[in-house]
Length: 509
Image (cartoon, rainbow, N blue to C red; front, side):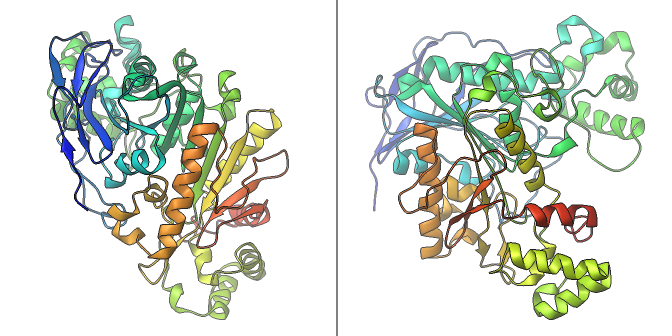
């Protein structure tokens, strides 16, 4: 059905703290894109944007942060992507809403994209578009771009007080975005006192980071972490001085010329930094970029305890069945008996025990999926996070597992990012997610449960069974599948057994 489009200074313009912004309206949803929420000099903390006269257009996405490597089409079918211009002037956000009437106070959800702390953007995946959530669930959706990789997390602290924030510049950007939302979202029909932050993968890590950032206190009231807890992957402190010194050397600069890093073209700086990293830390791998423990970020809560205000934040935390364990080793063509023989050959009698545990945990699945189940990636660390939250008496913590088997590769179980189109009510833009009535029903359940969590702090949807919060010793997991259901402590024994045996991903991943 054709929709009506509006874009003019009378009907699609709002007044923010710094000036007038013009978006557009398509059907029932207003969109404002590329809104500058702050500005920043390279390696410095963000600053407020200057006020402007007249009407500033917010009709197109803004620049996304420059990346260390070129974008790739690899995996685009599983997670369809958008490729967009990059530039250092990337502190911008996007808003979708059904109302631009101040005072209606709709609940607000703020999305932080994946890609670790070094890649990705707010427009990277087609499923990040907020139109459907705004339209179907009547919430205000905000997505954020911020500085990444060496622009957001390069450690220059030892090179002068004026660079003390370099290693957490990206975190300060995200806090600046939340402050902008707090000060301006009512002009877009939102409620500044009812804000939920959510993110997937690196975006989930950003949610955890913001929950450990004292400057973010009061800027959000709820949080959802999707495949975002990665155990010890992110360290509290990594001294980057030696990498920076080697970078300077490769650029033909001396230590006292560190100021020149502020003006060297990004591509030249990035190439030198990556080369320097590998010379200082020989071996494969990617340069380390993540928040550093400081007064901005209080460090990993599993090591340092939960920030006091974070204890009062209701949380939804979950992951997908396979995450990064998509390889099958050809076992999908074998019977359960043949897969069991394979396991016994690898593990002896422990192989039989592993097979029994998997079939008890997932009685409806063929045994070959044992090589795909996520054990060491996210699920085990989610469970530790939940245990700590419940034992410390924090606000309600809800957990989910996305288990849908998709119609690709002879039945591929849910991979990393597979839940995003469903929570965003955007299955339509992800071809592989379309499974007729199955995906239509599940999309409604997942986006509906998320929207109700954004509204009330409790995830629920009329066609879902009751989704209780976790309790001490009682992990109530919502299994999102063709038939969604809640199971209690259902995979504890399997994970405890599989991890020391290195079953998926250690052996098969």
